[in-house]
Image 1 (cartoon, helix red, strand yellow):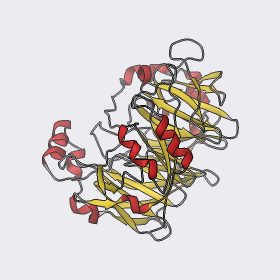
Image 2 (image 1 turned 120 degrees about the vertical axis):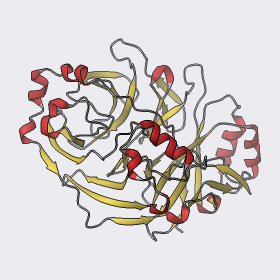
Image 3 (image 1 turned 30 degrees about the horizontal axis):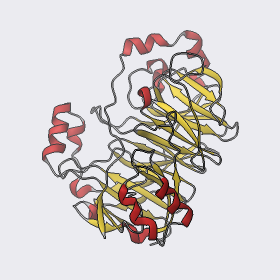
Amino acid sequence: MKRITIFLLTIFFVGCINQNNERSRYNKEQIKSLHLDSAKIVTAESDSAIKVDLNPFLKKQAFNFGSLIEEVTLVSLETTDESLVDVIYKILVTESNIYIHDRYKGGGIIIFDNEGNFVRRISNGQGPGEISGLYDMDFDINKKELVAFQHSFFLFFSPSGQFLRKERLPFGFYNFLVLSDGYIFKTLDRQGNEHLEDLKDNTILITDKDFRLMSVGLSYPPSDVNYGGYSYLYRNNNNISITQRFVNTIHQYDDETNKIKIKYYLDFSRKQLPEKYLKGYRKEFFDAIKNNDYYYYLGQYIESQSHDVFYLCNNYIGLNTVIYRDNLSGNLEGGTNADLNFNEIPQIGFPVTSYGDFLISYFLPSKNDSLLINSSILSNKDKQKIKNVEEEDNPILAFFKLKNF
């Protein structure tokens, strides 16, 4: 058995936006189109919340990750001069395509089909249909459109990446997901949306397809620390989950009933970062997480149809913790190090997204992958994929399903 260390997805600073610039960006017509007077405030329900005790995992420990794996399928992303993948921010899988938001020129989208064949990289630039400074993306299943968010605008593309249209947005936000008849948006701070008036202190904005504000919810947590992760909205099939940085509850949004409920409450109170450091100065926060054995939650969460994955940060020990939950039994498995046999399973330390009942990770090709030629888990087709790639080639996606435990 060999050991690999779990790392979190890219963590970065979220910059503040100048209030005056943001306020002047929206004209009277845009503000009127929001119909602020008719928007409803949705209060989160807590009756069915499940407490997840993470305290047993607050230490350096290995866990037998390999024993949890039931099935692994590999997708090798085609490598050409046009299809080279930069640092990956987000992976979005649909029935026909794989969309990757990477760091290319500050934020780009590259499209592969589900076999990993290169389809298109959407052009980066300031021209019509080009992307400049991508923040997020999602796929509209009903309209069969890829929706890309760059500052102040949605860009709409066909599934293969052909530009369709562009629409200006009447407020600021951080993440979004497409709903059946609208959108759900996640904001991070109070700055920039002063034109929402009494509704500006809500982190969730729900609109129709014309961006008319229908509902709001989840007020801002008591944190002044401008530090966060990449995503706070998650979807698996029809399940939509919402997280918040430094808040230990995971909410679920029901698109049909327009209700928000607390799905999970994460308990790691034995070593949780004291709240006082979230209300003070930035230096005090960084000193606290560097010099003390504190854990904190940035909102990173993934779910498949059968399992959930939680991540905790700990700067003091220099390692981060991943915990898998079996939804059938409620049992937990996890730790700071994932033990697996590299002769059987690729170096898939942690998932970055999900699709149906599969969690999805990726790894960079390596000469050590030749050890997998006799794997009893991988198919002959997947073994051939590994055999044919070079170390400088694109990442290989690993779709893996977990056993019940």
